[in-house]
Length: 320
Image (tube, rainbow, N blue to C red; front, side):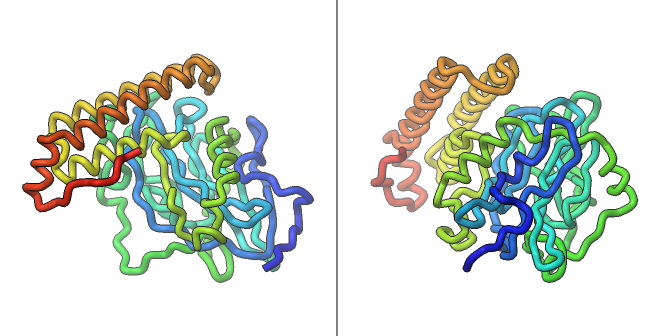
């Protein structure tokens, strides 16, 4: 199906529409609506102070592609992320870019989950320069994130799960509240460089295209922009669940991943949000070492024996 561009001569990425401090605008307008939101699990928050940015369907020259949800460092303490959203009107779908600000603004009433249930955000709040996480609705790594609380009153219990990904006729019918209209007049801040590079990476990934994955992306969420840390944490979690890793081994491996994540965060903070080539090499060496340790401990004779005792067939395929 051909798509007709209405407002943009050249497609621009959803996260690149904002200057450093400005008002959000429309990045792109097309005539074909986005797929429904995929069902996916939220990885645990890997670093104290990171905030969740939900996944969304962006648009490129080859159609819609999925940008995975990811935990990111905000530009500064006190800022919150308002997700971008698609809005349908006058026969076209308009993309309204996400942004950082002191309050959560209107994001089309779209239920992105994990605290973004259509209005506001109930997954946590700032207490001065410290972010407190509501673990009733968001997932955190308790070995590195300590500022938590539980408030289950914010959970919406419903038998109807709405996965519609756009606002307007045929989608979510919602308008900004008086309070959200007030928030719209506050200063807004652009996505971080990490967020922009995150979207750019998946714009180049053909497996992220809805036309390729059928609306079910294989990579729906990551714990960090580079994503590797979550893959390793997932391997640790799988090892613990299968019995291949003991509680002590699991705790040690999670602490090792947490230390790597903290080092990356500190290096980025010292270098304006980026890593030097030397720092990237060091992180890769550390992650390679952690990967080898995960594999060796999950495939040791003791681990195989525990797995066999649980009725599990021995793993034949080597993890990468």
